[in-house]
Length: 506
Image (cartoon, rainbow, N blue to C red; front, side):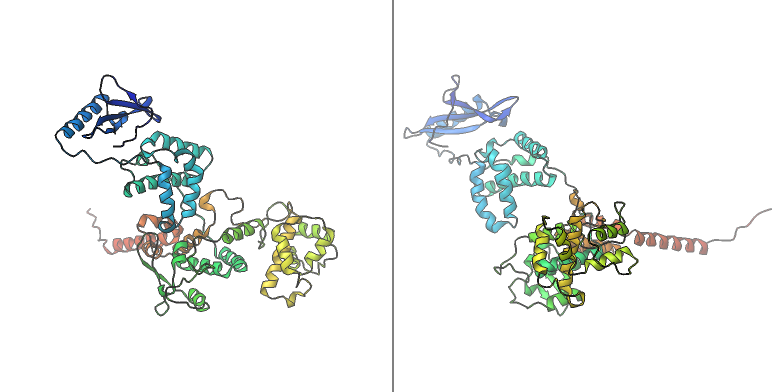
């Protein structure tokens, strides 16, 4: 009940003290939904207004009149009236409290805040929860798809609305059914299919090493243990049992603790690090706190690997042959010695190692606009570009090679040969895109390829159900064929051993 008179109430003459008001959003049977209110005076003569309910909920003017009569009868006999109902709350009001809760209640706070401000706030911030209908939510879902958003994003937006209303209920801000439960959420098929080859894993780790040794170490840990990013962020020194070569995964996604094994390469990784206090994070942020998300440097590394020829394959596509590329370079830069190397790819790779290659090229291309990556490498290599090949250390040689390859691709965009794997370049299917989670998927895939039993993979991955692990079973077809062949051998052996002589009657 409320002492404030709701706006736009229309008196129903047939029923004394009964009023109705139409919703601007909710509809019922093709017409605006109606809400019934009643008014009466208490024992002190104070006017009381009470909301009864909506027509879509089964209420009518007659029902409202009956409820009003019961209230008056209760007052006349001195009985207590029902307790005041809480005032209607808007979704925006719930968000204000939810936004504060995000700081301690959820890890992906940034994502929730972004989705709310972009997709939810413009539509529902000023709408009371009771007026958010299933039809409006279905309409929102359709509009999000029309904008080209991925099913996962659309589902996240709807789930966020569901969480907001559930929190409003648990926080006693509102009571009623959650309309999102009647909305069909998008069905996702986002199981990762792409996993790294051993060669690609080494290339990625080498690229990450140039950016951040910590990011490289976290990636290596995921590759060899299958740990999720969040599990690595939560890892503390007290979770490591170096004596038994075990990692206690304390706060996994499914809240079931599990053990990961410290392999020799992971043991070396931890031993090179300075052990901290038991409650300190193994991989802390710059502020010595828990890392909140995978660094964008990981994504930028994939972009560099996808857009530049960080390594050259022996197999070239039809656009140009190694010999044609060699001749193209010689025509522009004839002073670069070809020596007596017969293999064009070998000749090309030798030139990629030359510190002076850039200086020779830039003399011919002074006005060329190079990318930020090239400019960065120009600055990095400036101090040692005049060194001989033998004087370069590993890091210097790696930078020289990267600069020269980027340079070739920039100058010869149409002639540059294509390598077999370009990481995420040109990939649009999310299941085929490489992300940090791909490292965990790669760990399981490598196990399956080696014929590891599916139940073992399930335990190592920390999956709740076997169904989550079965998607890796197709990677070990040889292992399954061996099992079937062995079964057939045993069957045939049993058949032979049980054969009895056949007697032929004349």
